[in-house]
Image (cartoon, rainbow, N blue to C red; front, side, top):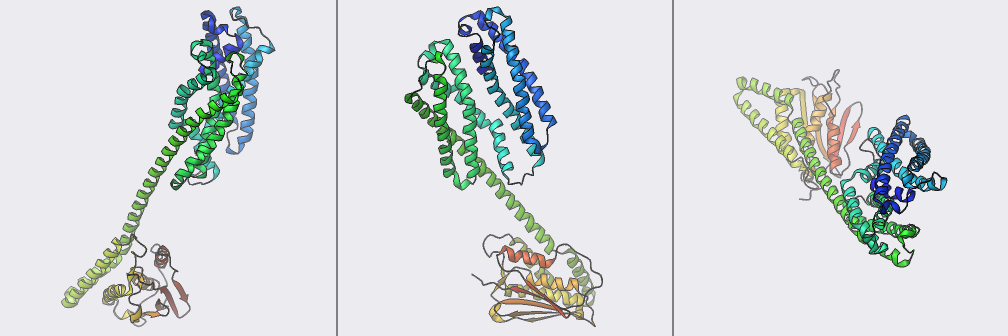
Length: 500
């Protein structure tokens, strides 16, 4: 703000002689430099006190009101103090009067507005970060990052900094004319005024861009988003051009006329700037969204791999393997031939478990489904292992219609249902657990068991039925139905049409 306030303040206090006499230029610059930093220290301390006193998120309105009130009162007294200090130096020719104080009050008021806005912006962002969860989709969660980027975005700072260096001299040349370059007073005063006018315009342009991003955040709306940016910034630039020419025409020394030609000139120059501004923001926003999308895709891939690994760990039940190896150890010494069959069945079971583990990550609509015949082939080996261990304590009957064997279902459905029955019921040779596997119209697989509740049961994580229901949800089909009474427990799962 110093390059703007120094020439403007001295112009209103000292007049044109500030730019024409080196001694006055030196005295005025030193005075405004000292008074500027004195005011900054006092205002900053006051602002920090107000922000610290009303620091809660719910106190935003009272915090804002008191901040502007306190800063306004301080600015009022500082303006009188500055003019009084200037009047002590007779070389400046400044008289301590209300007429002299008024321009300084107006200039200080404009500066106070941006000072308070900046402090409120950063303070509200800190409060938002500490109180708002990152997953929130509210306007607060969307608006605060946008406002934060308005203050600290490298792209925004770079673009507006370039505009100050390029846009402002060109605008002054087109509006004021060649005199802008040959007259030191016009060069300093014109640059300061246009820079001061550009600050709120830059804020409005940036907010317009953020509004377009808020309305069309998706990567698929890139063209529409940039078009909306151009529309909003075009409206802002057109209105700003009219207001800027009017303000410049009120400064007599600039000799700028409030005419259509000057307005059209600024609108044309602003349109070129808007086009570059919107394309740059649109491009970098689209690039950041694409990069974010790629990160999310990679994250989903990792989550799927983790889910695949967790599923595989669940399938490779260590208790089942331990019990199977114990049974195998007993069979080797008692019946070698049966032990060989047991090893073959165990190999078939774990080969199928590993195959379904590798294919559990869906690549298509039905890639995670297997035919009922494939499940029956697997379950035959699985039942053989169970019969070897439990003997007459477990009876499993199968009545499967040929018409449904080519239907599909999630892999390991039958194993899940058999394990669920064994988990919740006792098994004794005199009171065997009977599991009946059948099919019914119009295409259902039914697994029923008699109820023999265990007196004590150890919970082993998420229910197998819940996992089975989740598998059916993944393929977009109806979940299994459960029928339970005093005599039996039955689960009915749909058999899906095969597309192969």
